[in-house]
Image (cartoon, rainbow, N blue to C red; front, side):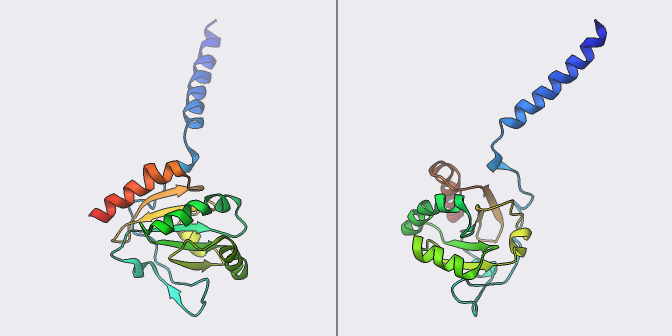
Length: 175
């Protein structure tokens, strides 16, 4: 009888860990970059490769970095929400077109509308790698000092926008 108790205890402990793990929101993966300075980079603009963007240009502003691509289905799902947010002019949104062909990114924005203050092209994905991009879409909230304050993995939806991102943006803008 005693030889069955130890395996049963081990099984119950493992089942408990599994239960807790399965109950977690996969979009809430902790990022080691939250609370740290956003990685520096210089990338060309999507619409004008002769012009460049660096996060230092946003110093003094709270802003969103939205990582997207023309080939991303979930990016198309969140696009109307980004368009609405852009119309409300609450926060600048910088789009990072990730591992995409320039012409495909431009065509997508022409067809669906362009919610971004500006769009940068990360054709080789190096900047996405520096930001710890798991996949697209991902959205980062960056404060006035250039510190990443929040990372959302997956598509924006009304709930995460209203409950997490916009309250954080308002708080950071008030500081």
